[in-house]
Image (cartoon, rainbow, N blue to C red; front, top):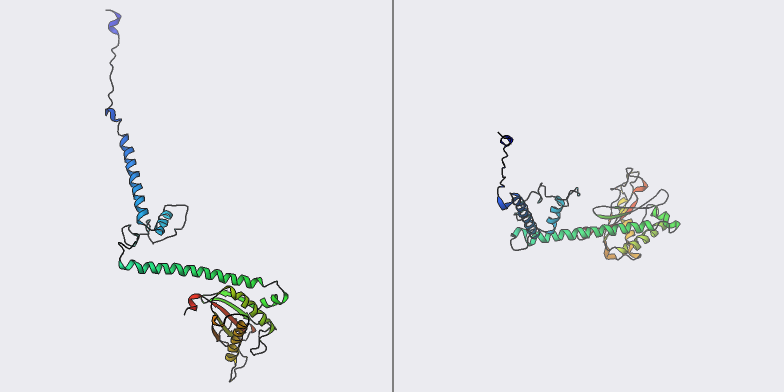
Length: 281
């Protein structure tokens, strides 16, 4: 027997790839990604058309992790603050599908609120300018510096209150009367000049300290009223239009500025630049 009879037998097997020319299922994944992207694109286009500018800002804030607090918060966790995108409150109201409750009246109210906010901001800026101008009088002269020691300002719901008050040994009025001292005339002159930059109406109120002894005929009411009216006269003399002065009031010793009712600090006159909403009442 020859050596060729013991040679190993080699079997060749051909590997057949299933699917032929379809290259497997990878194309299905790519197609699914494409369809998903197109759906997201059309959804974005629909949202841009169906929502207001304010709602779009809220959606942008929701998906923006760099902004810690959303500009719009509806109380919900979703991008529409808990509302469905199909609700009437969420969709843009263009007058075609809006109900009677959400058409003209609510839009008018929203516009009114926006206008009121703008007016309030302008008024706050004007009050700040008045306070800055009053501060600017300091340093002009020794008399102005002395006068500014009698002034304090504060902003309240009623308006900008400018308080003129007595200092120990430096009263605004002579004795217990209503005749203004020289420093009072200087103060009112400065205020009249500053009041020209605003058009708010003015209220003047007089306050006096309590009498140490209770008397049958307590003059505090008359004194406070006469002092307030004297300031009104000085304002008008220095160029303030009389129609801007809305009211003049005397409060006697009923509203002390400090705890001690007999302190000279309670002798004061408050001049108020009234807010517009107060002025209209």
